[in-house]
Amino acid sequence: MHDCIFCKIVVGEVPSEKVYEDDDTLAFLDISPITKGHVLVITKKHYKDLLETPSSDLEKCILTIKKIAPKLLIALEADGFNIGLNNGEASGQVIKHIHFHIIPRYHNDNLRMWEGQSYQEGEMKDYGDKIRKFTIEL
Image 1 (cartoon, rainbow, N blue to C red):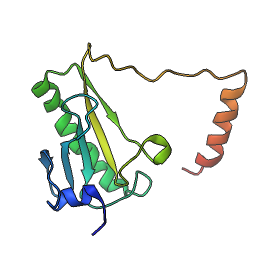
Image 2: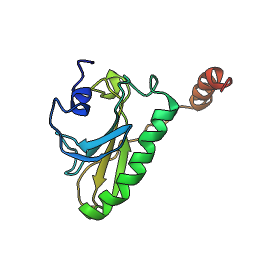
Image 3: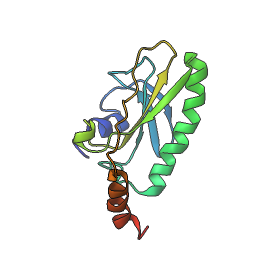
């Protein structure tokens, strides 16, 4: 057993407000929601992050999100939702267990979208070249 709060939620050692569960995934309310009804979807198996998680388990999470998200829109009368994943400490990942956020959104929720940046002349190509160098094998 990992010393992981989400693993403890999976086995019932820590209480949670579950909204969906199947053999491989669990969905429950975030204790610090961005908006009320903010749901976390996790794998029942412990994986640290997106890069560690097998594709088959990621697919199971996405299928769970697809089941929950439309119901969330209806149940909460939300106008939309954001799906989020923080990968690594610099991105804001606090719990080192793969988890996706489903955040209900409303036209009047006063949440701001991230502000985009601009590339300088030629910089976009440079970044593209850097990324392609490592993704060409994919």
